[in-house]
Length: 168
Image 1 (spheres, rainbow, N blue to C red):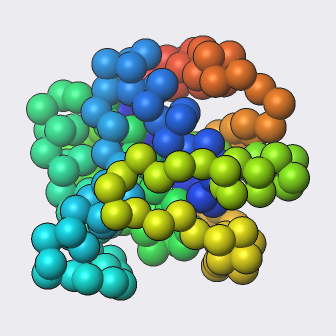
Image 2 (cartoon, rainbow, N blue to C red):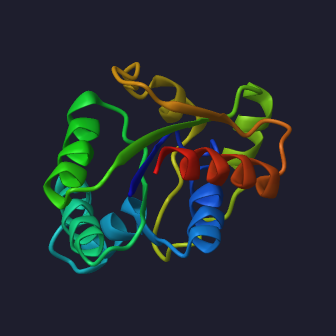
């Protein structure tokens, strides 16, 4: 199964992705890690464009073909990236499940974004202004919506894992 997370920075995607990967013994593929590694390599100093996503698609596909559950942790803001993730699952012959992560409490979302410490060397967090003005297309497929506002990670992941199990 390919679990495709999407959501704005600071919404709780990585927290959910890590906990879900532990719970399901899955592979966590995080685009932020890949993009920063590309920048750190010296080959792509600033804007990495689609390179990080393309690498992530390849890593995810390799792990899916090994029979692993993959949790894709990306902002995934536009239809083309969402379609590409679905294509990865189709080529690997596995189920794709899309999960939209949001924090409906705007003050909490902003607080999280502005107080979190980057956990990837060299990564700079986006500003609140960048987050709220970023293009973020409405989902065009059926998506599981997870609201992280006021909920504990364990509770969210337990419910999400149960829902995913019912789909497989």
